[in-house]
Length: 473
Image (tube, rainbow, N blue to C red; front, side):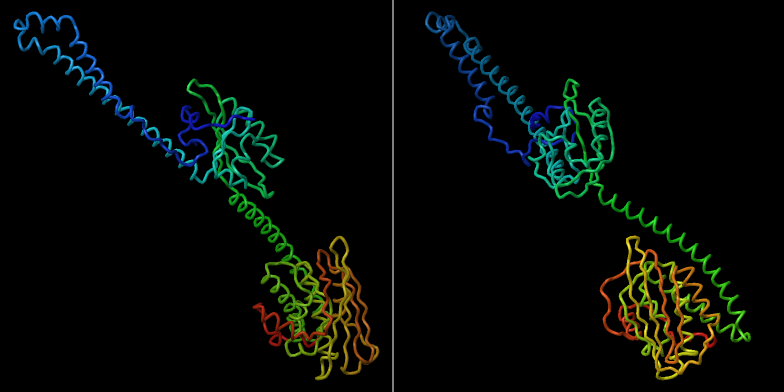
């Protein structure tokens, strides 16, 4: 067990001025004994009395008094007495001055020690004193509180017992350097009693006795956990920003390529410039809605049902019903999904069940998730109460675009069917890096309800009715 540093030991050593005393918070000064408080009077009075007695009983003075007292002058008779009295006064003054000087020095030393103790016990820094073997001989209350321990629990313990495992070897090397007399400033990570981390900046100084012998090491410990936490948060933020910029660059390039493809497809099927413009406008608007949703949420994963609700024009939102579990897909899939369902909706509005006032569309989906976070979604698109479809129905450029996007971007398949009662489509989509919520919606919910939920949550949504899909598909 390491010896505990006492107040006397600390005061007697030539150490840094900010040093602790004993474990006590204050020093209680005991009353000064009577004989020390009146030492000058006692010594001077004793000297005077002893001198007078000596003169009174000496042979010479007895002879003067009893043989021939008339031969003595007045001065001769009192000079011995005067010398004794004067020397007693001088002795008293010298002793009194010396004792007062000593008392002032002691009071100044006690006051300085008290200030040092108060500074150590009230400082925001931890004070940790180790012997040459790295065992704790003193800690202040701040240091103990940092580790969530009592001071007595630290005394005698090696410092590395409170370090995070990865710092043990480093701490041993630094301790060896400090024992060789090196001053050092370094960071390390402690492990608190509650198993949380404490990052600390330590300023280490060797401790020497008056003869210059190494007797220990003083560590001034500053808690830098908030700074480290802020650094980690900033680092994470910068990494996220870098990833976002890379993703944005990738998305912009892909979007430009997609726009070129849309222009080529629309140009090949448009009958005139107006039809071509409407077709391009509707498809670009669908992509714009998808990326607007991403922008408002910081380019995080998006809800499948939320995207669908944004694509459905407002005047049709009470006639389109959604049923299925919550699926959150990666941002880079937004554009492809938006175009796919925009084309299906446009086809329903132009030729299918939404082209009259009674038709409706049921969009149902089920999902399954594998270990790689790839969610397979099977979407069933069913139209009813619309005009009877004329067989055979030609699969135009828009549905060909759907087939291509499902196969290339969504790694799935699509099956188009057009019975007289209304279109029946099945889409199998593989959404990489997606999340499936296994708590499905059991009720048929009109798309208008999702729109209301978005507005209730304060999420912006441009009125879809102001931008209807293209009239030609």
